[in-house]
Amino acid sequence: MPSHVAYCHKKLGPPLNQPTEPSYLRICIHRFQTALVCGLLWGLHRLPYEKRLKFGGWVFGRVIAPMTSYHKRIVENLELIFPEMPTVDTKRLSQEVSRNIGITFTELFSPDDFLNANANYSLHGTGFEALKQAHAQGRPTIVVSGHFGNYDVVRANLIRHGLRVGGLYRRMDNPYFHDLYIKSISKIGNGLFERGRSGLKQMLKFLKGGGVLAVLIDQRLTSGAQLNFMGHSAYTSLSIAELALKLDALVVPAYAVRQPDLSYCIQIEDPILHSTPEQMTQDLNDSLSQQVSRHPEQWFWIHRRWLYADIKEA
Image (cartoon, rainbow, N blue to C red; front, side, top):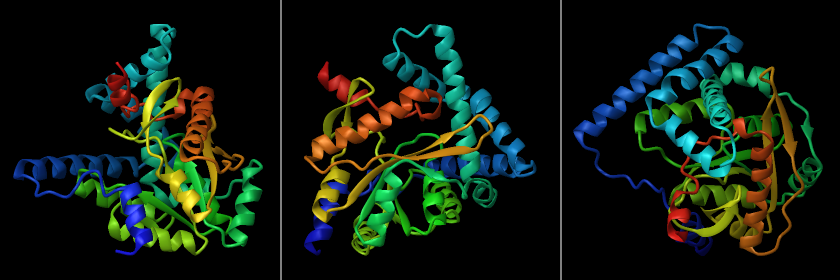
């Protein structure tokens, strides 16, 4: 394995869910889950786009989240970060969070309508000029966001503005739903790289060729650097900062903030200064924390973001 690929494989790691031979029961469960999703999508696509989004948000917020562990997890996370929030406000905010997730899910599985509605926005923020300059110079660039608003709105609009944008993703447990999801988001833009040796090799070639890599940094981890996120310690991967330092890549935080009319305001923030991997990653955490504090209903509070670090600290 070439040294740069071995480095990236070590730092970004193989897929967290290594392929194993699934049991017959698990195969049946995965097929059943995917069939339910397909049925829901079929029904949603009978509606005009705006009504589809609103109904998708309602279904997830009022039906799916309460029937699964999502609602409980959202409330637990909100109570951890906002302990002084009255119970009635926590309940209201949890419903808004669930609605946002449902809208995002519906958008991503409506790629044609999604692009028609959301791929022609102006890009705000001083970071966009730095991003364009780096792209023109052929400098590797990493655009960092989180599960906030709709992260693929950023990717779609960067592509529309003439940038060559790729994305890094992790394979899901359910292979049938995974294929359905990747097929849909590939219509928003190609250049998707799966975590693992082959995907990382392609990603490195893409970056070294002056591409723009879009990544999310707020997934749940069971190890890593313990950094502050929303006032609590959370395991956080340093791999993006380490990769940026190794390739001299520009690192730019970017967010798509959903507006009341379901349109978006895209904010491209100032580039992260190159320093240490820990400080750069903390700066990225702080950037996302500020967005979540301003718009808490737009972050995906379903992840157990703080669980393992908090337990270890205790």
